Length: 197
Image (cartoon, rainbow, N blue to C red):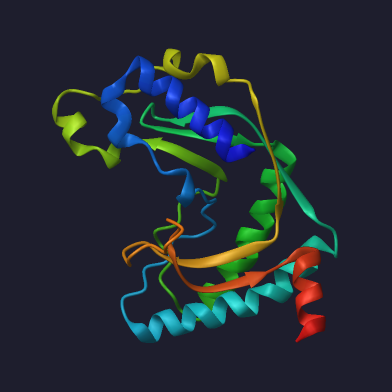
């Protein structure tokens, strides 16, 4: 549902401003970034896998066995250059706590997460930096009129059930989603899984 709505917005923007096509992010890659880690060696990737696995217990302690149902509503922007779907305030607070827990595990492993900015969960679907040519041609801002119709729309809900360690630069999967070094399941799905194991 969320991805369908995002595609609707992208289509609307495309009909008004076809040049922006190159700046769209494919819905197959949609994700919420928790941290950005710079992992220079395979050794560091292995450490990051461990850190993520260790964070599972901390994350589950925060969730307390309850499902976190994430609600997406409305469109926001950073600097008129990044356009994203917003997440409800209370969900943001909860996810912030989860991000801190994961961050602690990465810090304990001495991994470089200096690339992580102030945490603000957002579902990016358009990014000017993805289309450097447009910038050279003077495209500096994305006008909010292009997506006005959806600015306060409800996009849908999604249960927070998984955290992936994704490689930005490796070849993407068949599905179009990032290459994953490791995934952990959290919430009710995570507990079922550990029972099976």
